[in-house]
Image (spheres, rainbow over the protein chains, first blue to last red):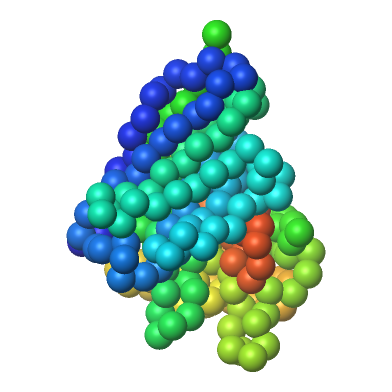
Amino acid sequence: QVQLQESGPGLVKPSETLSLTCAVSGYSISSGYYWGWIRQPPGKGLDWIGSIYHSGTTYYNPSLKSRVTISVDTSKNQFSLKLSSVTAADTAVYYCARRGMVRGDIKGFDYWGQGTLVIVSS
Amino acid sequence: DIVMTQSPDSLAVSLGERATINCKSSQTVLYSSHNKNYLAWYQQKPGQPPKLLIYWASIRESGVPDRFSGSGSGTDFTLTISSLQAEDVAVYYCQQYYSTPYSFGQGTKLEIK
């Protein structure tokens, strides 16, 4: 069973860098799939931040691209998110998720972590 | 960017009755060479991550009850719950994965009448 678990500081100061890690178990990232980050401000909807392949290929949401870096560490079977110059608008629950595939075709995000709340405040 | 718009924003349905949620994309999400609509539906209960219900607009994810069904093509899609159960109370989101940036609808809150 594939499991994802986010970890990282729950409180970040404005203008600093938010850093989160997603540990994957039950599946080797090196075997394939794209892995992504999605966030959800309190009481609001879902926003895709970006995705990464095990090779390091990344896709970012242009609305955040200048501030976002997603990286992968296949030796630790995990991938990470860095979001720089944060403001209160970046306060959200951050989810990591796997972009699923069926017979070589994309099917949406099929496995999700439980999410971690990050508050941006001084 | 593709904008996803759901209607209604909230919905109250009696137990055992049908619930219908609509989703419209600002441009087609039909990947014609694969003949598939790159459209998914998710269910999110309070304090939980979203759960994939439907992909390719109409294919139920493994383990999803058959009272959930998806339909539509191109730019207009529908999620139908044929007989509402108490455990279906949740917020439902559509999502396009036709092109990046992937985008979600604003969500539809489903409650019991």
